[in-house]
Length: 459
Image (cartoon, rainbow, N blue to C red; front, top):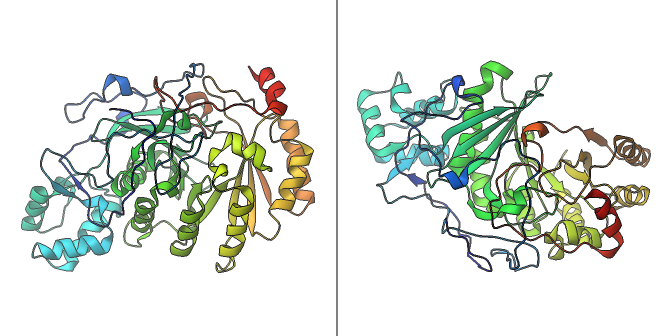
């Protein structure tokens, strides 16, 4: 795929059903922890091979970068596109991609082919409910024969091809999928001893935000995922792993990408996931994370009842400008004021602040006190996360003792705060470790003078 730096594009709304060529995939637990070798699956190009357990890869830097519209160009935020327009079409012949449609769209499409709305509901339940999770027409038992024939001729069931499932020491699973264009995305399933099992889905191939502590950010942005490609990650997670870990109860949009930069497809995907005759996730059990795109954040809070997580990670603009370049456009004050304004119209709603702790950068006692002051007046919870190292990273994790001290200071100030342990980090499946940047990478930004000593210690 060609990579272009300093390019600006127009992100377009996707209101039509998504179209894709026929694809096939083998869905069996036997695929766990080994590459798929089946004539039904497309192999990904060698240059897109998934990252194995290599924590010591070197990072190169690039010298030019841009942020796609609708945001203005900002130093330090990168993108490189291969021409994807978010519509999901192919030159191989077009079929409607079923998982790219909401229920209302599916019902209208079924009726346009001369069938009753009831047939659409039966199809929907076989795609998403009843433990069937159909991936081809042979799995549509109970449907009208002519209807199944119409589907086989005009519709495609699958948006993803299963490539590999890797199991970490703690039971976390990292699932690699090959897309129709050969790109690879990663999804993580996080089992729990309780009844909570979470699938962490990706919303983009790569990410344009260039957060300095995130491995995915090194990739730049290749393209947005379609709604079908997002939804099918959750479908695969349930199909593959429900029998092993129990029901998948939660979805977090915390995989590859900035979800709100792909807000049209993310909102559509959550609409599909929420439908009570299908996957039937609770809105409070779907969490969409953002680095702080303020206009899209406003829209999300107005249009969705799903939970929101804001990746904050700093208590001053100087630090956040460095580790999260999006702050140069939407600074801490604007971000938090927007939350205060919008949350006035939400009942019993709390935003989740994520705070990745970086040794010597954002973990001081002063940071804890500033954080408690900053979030005053915002209904919220705080997750303190340990930094997960990756090849070439310039940061160190904060010590456990200092994280506990930081948490205690916040708790004493009246904050609701949790320490979150890393999951799957031995297989590069933890927060901030997903993706495969390749040779051309987003830029590492200049370290502010007062933090150079801390960075030198980490090398």
